[in-house]
Length: 446
View 1 (cartoon, rainbow, N blue to C red):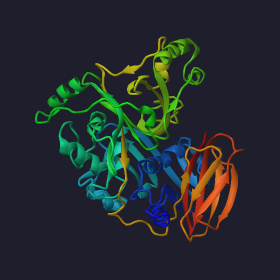
View 2: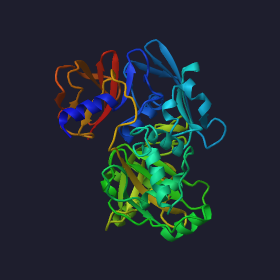
View 3: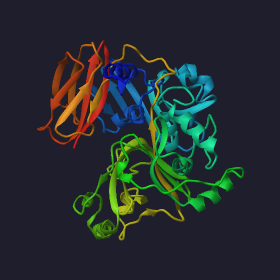
């Protein structure tokens, strides 16, 4: 595929939030994204702004109200298991402007949308509601090109692990047990990156859930370090647990902890216990987007409310093949001495990572006058490359995480290269403006 075609393709689809200059996240409801991470970040954006994790240019936040220029937007962010308010009925799709999803969700869709009637962003959902909402907005709207229908049809077609039928949210257990049944290499669609399973226990449990299912064929697969931005991390719990599991999206690749860096996650009373585990296992810090409870993870953005947010958890793996063995979910587990871990076994049946590779971008109508940009490498170190739509002049503004503008350029070519050697490590917001529209992306310097 030629470079010019790639640039034009990204320009058509849009890689991140596109907002008119006076409207926050313009086109938020019906947007289709080219990748899992772009969908995860953009759909999470109003909640991350409200949580002060993202300092969005020209936006201020007070009491769950975002003021963008002269307009006010209310944010309702709640972690909610399926009950009244969890879904939006198909009869309301036209009101929300989301008929684009009618083939994927023929009767109902998880309630994570903007409601124009009261200028509010609503999240009334759980981890899988958020995941299936963003997967259904990734790729295109065809059976094979859409990330959610693709995994649904793939796992249900093999029938060795259960998965939700069309129009329903799959459980975390179904993702966690289903990923290890996928192929490990594909040119498009879903692939199994790594994981670990209690295969016999899963097989028995699967036949309790669905007697007609085939023998479970999921296997252990090492290489957790190969997980990358946009991959889906899933935990599947046994039937004895109060929850069936949890799902999250990698913000970036896992970071291997050392005897020094592990101290950031454990208080003095449990640090020796954590270092003892580090002598026997690899321990990774994993930054994720998910929908969970208040202060669900380490360094969690949800300090005041539950719902969609950002945080860090720890995953430990076998030193031989780097297959995941367990995890430390939050600071509460870290405060015990010895530390509390969730370990593969009687309570945890599966820990797995899946990846969607978008091989096709057909089946939907992109917004032709909305610009988009691609930044790479991301995360990066000494150089930042920004790929821009060809033959479209615009401007680039770069902000630090606290909202200070450090760079402003008028774009005259399709590629902008910046030397970032002197920039401090951390999060940066890159804003591209063209034809009255904005494209906002995040970049991390390591």
